[in-house]
Length: 285
Length: 258
Image (cartoon, rainbow over all chains, first blue to last red; front, side, top):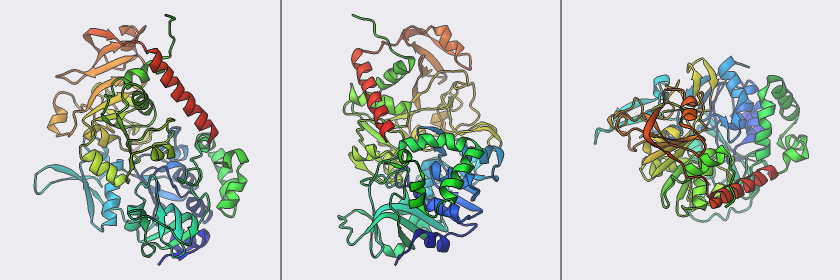
């Protein structure tokens, strides 16, 4: 059974220094509130796992929380570079960042293998790309039935997976909809998990076949309204594209990034205060 | 008839859009490919099935998405599936006719680099990386690439092959048993390059109106092969321009408001 906790307590109890941490959510439902809480609690030496690092990992990397990144596409969608990620890779600031770099199809296969408790995933992938020449975690095997050459990638088993979803009931059953990415696989692959939700309700009223994670596979459920800002929660608020564009200037220089993190994340007690700290035109959705 | 004016970017997007067949299932990258694929859907290819790697199948956005998983894509899709499903059942399953990719850098065999400039471990520029592109480039029936023409973007050999085009040329793709036949056209703001039937080297086959062959050759980072007969791309029609501009105006308004 999931515990219903406040986010500060959940992160304090379930995220530890040195952990392999997956904060998933493909463009949609990105768990920003939880990422900020990890920064506030000054977790260090994390291996961050995520297909698309997005702004959330740019913030965690720039704040010095990470020593390794497992990923497949590290940009600011539709805008350009993640400057904190680039600074860590190109200049080792604020600390060097080891990369375990894949293609999306490979990361999806790694999570699916993790959820299945299989040792590796297979796919018709990594064809023609030079990634395997630089990444020893991509191997090739022969199909025992047809002889076809296929890629093999090791399962991902995060110490803790954190996702954001639309809602949970009071027992901690979680429902999400829209672009659901790899969140289900990432939770099932993990040893521990935290789900932040827009709201906790008496009854999910979920139709058959809805994407529901049952309470007994989840560690903690935390209600955090607008907890995916500046990404979005379908049915609750839109993606704040303007913030994604503004982030380019905030993160471009170390000083402007540090000032932003100090003021808006380290200088606020929780996500509600973070949202209040933004100018009204930045925070509306 | 009054002379219609248009930008080189508009010509590029329109020329790229024309290559989307009506009814084709099309796996769409963000940015230039997304604009072209949606223009095709709104003009000559209303039955094209647009698929984005966020798992949105048969999506019909009224404004262009900024990200690959904007809510607009989910809300206007025929179906939304998980990432595991989109990459296995749909892409690796061989169900997609056309992959439509952008690129930071390509070489003369249409290999795409979106990973690093310079050495992998000590890059001078770290680019975003692969995303879904290697699987799209390998598995779709064919691939279109669209990017702006420059010596920096069109290099003899990319520093890093992120997504395989025709690799070393010739039959190298077939020898590696790629499911799809790879890039069939590169559409830029100056013209259209297509791979030679035998060598697979990109060859200039069409220049956009007002663009000289010399200009395209000068903007290419390798000695560009020029077809015996180079066509001139048909200029944008009034309808194409009108639909593209309306789409981009709607998009700008929507993004400014969010």
